[in-house]
Image 1 (cartoon, helix red, strand yellow):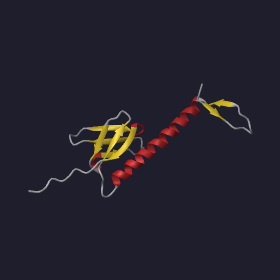
Image 2 (cartoon, rainbow, N blue to C red):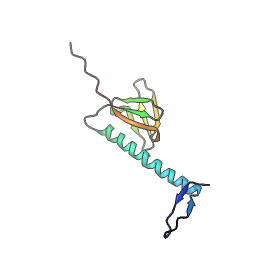
Image 3 (cartoon, one colour):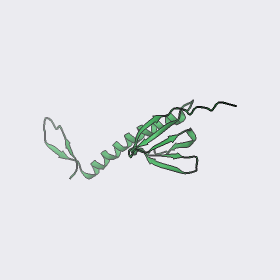
Image 4 (cartoon, rainbow, N blue to C red):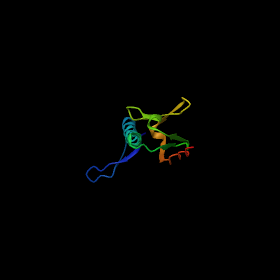
Length: 113
């Protein structure tokens, strides 16, 4: 049995259940809306000039710093984000699991001399 949906057929208040295929279509549409919104925000931040460093916070609470535009990328399908670290490791995140994007203050430049 699928999810319950209310339908208004000429004043009728009968209930109709979505089929499994309809349910999957709705879930796919919701995922697309969410992932395109998050990845759109990330693309704007990565292409901003001047660049402002930011952190990506996941639904599990982990936080990943993005210190430069070269440290992150969004795949063309807009469903995954890759963050690279200075030690040549990386993490790939599903856009659905990004809970927040937080701007982080720039690290102060040490005084010369």
